[in-house]
Length: 58
Image (cartoon, rainbow, N blue to C red):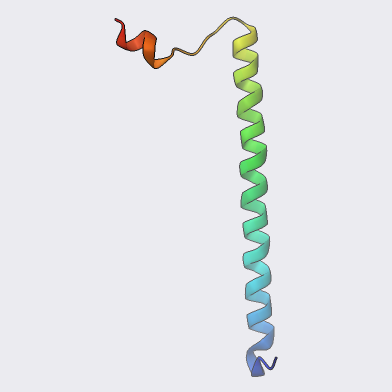
């Protein structure tokens, strides 16, 4: 595959996009784990989430 005189720019662009996408996916996974731990801590303290059925019964 011949990318011509702009090969360095094309390869660098794809590499940067790949690094950014991997970073975003990692950030989302880590943030999800952090939020899940926070929810688990709240539930361990006795704080419960209200369900829709309880809200509509009022």
